[in-house]
Length: 604
Image (cartoon, rainbow, N blue to C red; front, side, top):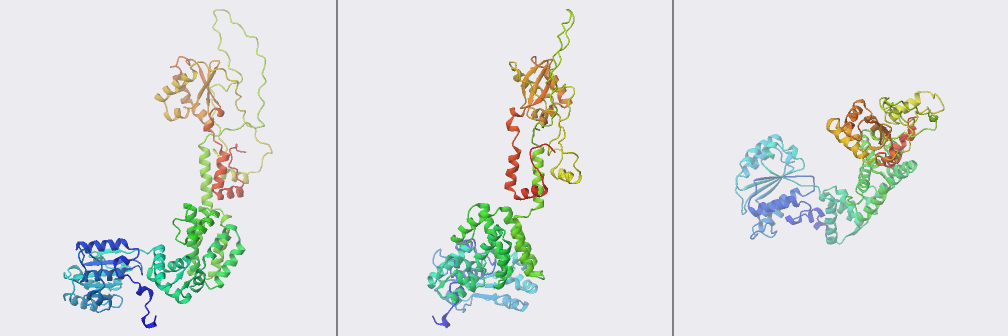
């Protein structure tokens, strides 16, 4: 092909009909419907990033309006009539393209106002395409406002801009606005593949993705990079060649960086930094690519699939594999370091030092602890343990049980004398009239951090554990009397109707075990439930409710802790804490560093 006839790819393959527009179906369908129904507005505003088809869509719409050989319900321009040909050769008297950046004066708008009065020459309407309309001065906008408010019936305005916020609100309110979106990488790759086939160029998938990524959502920019790649590599585009020629950081360097982060190789990370800077790569571009790379890993970790990773199929599989080395927390913190470094680089007096510090910080990410997260996890554990029953085990230093003395001979009272009530069994709990408050547990009364501070500041008093009060020694249960549990359930029902429902709900799982002398023994899951039941007001209400049940009338009540009867209410907190440590590595590191013991044990 002769050089005089050469057209850049962006011009050669510029869409000529609505069907050729890439990834703007929402705009295309609306414009096609407006043409079919004959409901065209007098002014349109096309907005969006550069290189996505705003001006191209305006040109197609202008040709479709003035095409003279359309038949029936057709809306696409024929490209063969005199109107279409004149526009392509820039000889049209009905379609005008105006660059607002160079025609932004009031005098230019006044000249336009004079021209719009002239009716179209051989066409349906006069169409004015004003590109980069935001470049007009405020005076020019005001001069255009009257014409835009009451335009001649044969005139249609199409404005295109990348910065709609700079257009006066009075202009915006008189236009139909269409927002063009950035073109997805996949659509750019598909379009490049079609052009490669048409031009006889072979390219691997990674090379096309590299070109599409350089376009950054703009098809026109991607086509410019494509022309540069063909000029460099000829008809065979290879990723490795393009990466070096276009000064793009090779994707392998990003995988190498994250591999060193996972392996905590600070030395190798610094060597990688040296290579990147020695090769002349822009460190800001490197960090931008690294952020995209870590973002792909985060998606793979979060979703478990490669559905939202916009790379070639080969690289998607690698991302899923590499993501197995990381957790969401670590990747999020790496992204925070990258973002912080990107914001500091432009004003840094020593960019190299800033980059090296960021690299080492990312490598040491697995060894560091986010203090706010770790403290929040510890507080969460404390709340969980505080609100969950914990059974205190018997200690080795507990007091020995009292000696069983031989009971004295039973005295038979003379006839006519009322026998005294039999004494309580020696092995039962204390008298129900003398109720002690439940004791606090390992983490319930004192926070873990407070206990750690106390350890650091208070000298050790003794090498022996303090003597723990003796736990109640349960006697062999007697066989329950018939209907005893049913009678106790009736007591709880009566109690719920006249007393604290929340307190009664706490005791709903309690069980009547037996009667010992004139005392009803009731089993509860833990000390917390027993504390609720032994409250003075609650205990008085229980006695009154028992008087309404014939089987229990006249009996006292005592509550004993029997956790083995309630396995579901006493979870294994040691196992739960180990699960949390595996889920949150920072919790494990913090507990080891501060010598904290989050276990289901009494306070030492």
